[in-house]
Length: 191
Image 1: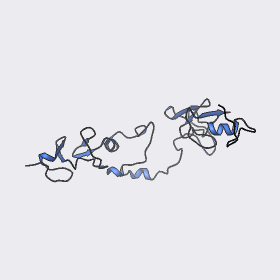
Image 2 (image 1 turned 180 degrees about the horizontal axis):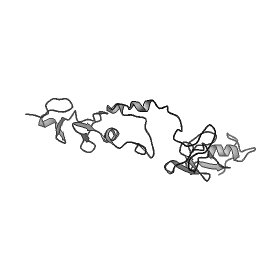
Image 3 (image 1 turned 135 degrees about the vertical axis):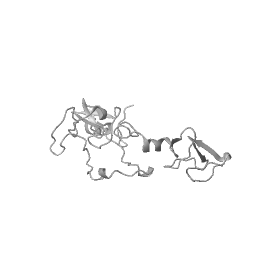
Image 4 (image 1 turned 60 degrees about the vertical axis):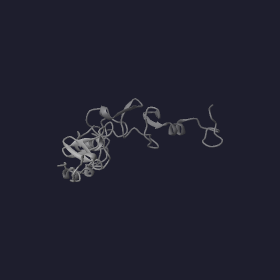
């Protein structure tokens, strides 16, 4: 007697059989149970009778918590509804506030906790989230231009008097001024 496919519950005959663990699947059923992506022997991750791609298997059954997101130090608001997981109702009752993880009182500017402190928001900067600029440690979210709020990195950073700027805003504010140094058709260029 032919085995039954766990996904569609029909009989699987040898000509169309793909095996994973002790289960037999049709070729058309050999897909991720969460996102329906086609699978092969290189990217299949079986979990009991269900098959998952590596990404969905990691989301549903992988390690969870701070630092285990899609990038360095990322957090995700996806609670797994797409993978058939139910959201934790205890998390819904807590109000979400921007910057809640910082130990500074943003209304009064008080510094609490151990330093170093971010010059922009006065919150404690932990090593995992530190960006260095203008001789200070900054949060990733605070490491932006003081004028245009553009994200900065070591190649686009200019500093003046303890504040950080993108190159364009720094040039506008502190660069050369006068006839021929504006922006437009009559501007001088260094060659």
